[in-house]
Length: 192
Image (cartoon, rainbow, N blue to C red; front, side, top):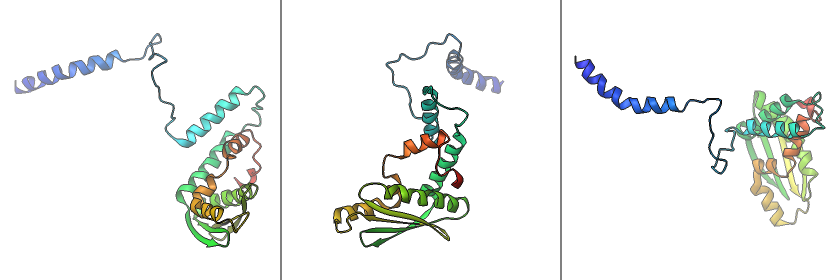
């Protein structure tokens, strides 16, 4: 008898919740919120979002050669980016006109460092204002970045202030590079 007296109030309290949950089931004719209400735009994970954006661009482009598309190559590149930015150890040393950054890791992180840093050294070197080189090392890679004008103290301070992560993010070539990888035209394909 005690169990029934305890159970009845619990059921009475739970009834509105059960009714609300049943009322929120999805049906084919379900009405969604009005378009003027805010809806989430974030996919919840950066790599997933980058891939989603590229897939949408490829799908919207009628000239996409789907036989050449390689989303898996883009996924591997994004894994490299994550490994290098989040798992590599860096040590920056000032050099005349800029900075020398030793980037180290083990296993897959070390391989990702070599692919990313060597390639990005060339990308930085092609940008105005920089002289840069990325070279493989026994434990990862070394990135040396100097101001085109090593006497420009503001440019030198900027390079040193950006540090490794800032220098990797420098430039607006990343999104275009990701689209090129997905289209199957990755110039660094043999590195991945």
